[in-house]
Image 1 (cartoon, helix red, strand yellow):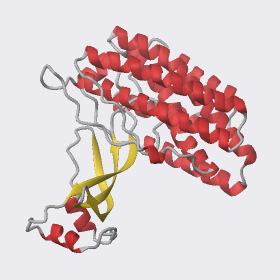
Image 2 (cartoon, rainbow, N blue to C red; image 1 turned 90 degrees about the horizontal axis):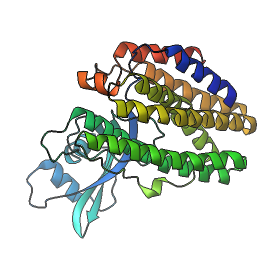
Image 3 (cartoon, helix red, strand yellow; image 1 turned 60 degrees about the vertical axis):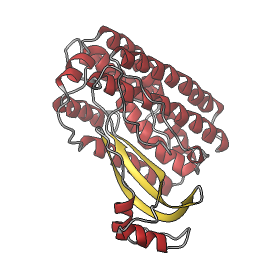
Length: 332
């Protein structure tokens, strides 16, 4: 695993190599989440699926009937993400018959930062002035993910302490949480300039409990060594290329701190490497490689012209270019 100085040097070289050329930002990384949704069942409904669910005892697992779960666990529309039903079970809600749906999904718009376990999908955004501005929507979703990463770093600091990591790593994780809070506030100010009020992230508290050392290390490899490392370039490119001066100023500052967060991720990976078994090291390396391959194979459409011009959001070609640079240097 590269040491911190290696990652900082390599990423800084990529920053400098950009020069003043107007290459677009590295894009909008996709975040994954899982959560539960409870839906009341109408006892008077003639729907066959509802009647099957009502006939099941409370607590019964219904996931063996995917058609039933899919029909009852209706998900709200989401213009920038998608959801799928993992399963469901019979439940009660306030004394009424209900079904508990297990949902997974992806939020396709955001910014840098770690995604904590238990993050629920974004609420539908609104604007007091009519239709939501696409730039405000993008920035508001970025603000939400930056705020969510505060939870991720606080959990990481707790896990590092529980698993006996060096005190310096624990301290840096706590500092990163504080810095991500600043990022969230800055992005929220920008989104409000475009008429959109960001919604706060909702994270299931039951998911924010210390995980095993291996699970923590695997998550660090994906969210830190891949997504946050990519996020550092994200902020750097956006700071160089956005036509909006306020966005450039904000992202130039954020890029420096995201670089330190990426370095922290690789330092945690190096520490884990020193205490893990060979099979655990292979497991974590596989998770990292899978995550980087997933980013490289992303087929997101070309961004809206306003996003590319004003916020520096990338063209597909530029995104592939930056991912290629990371794979040849930092992820190699």
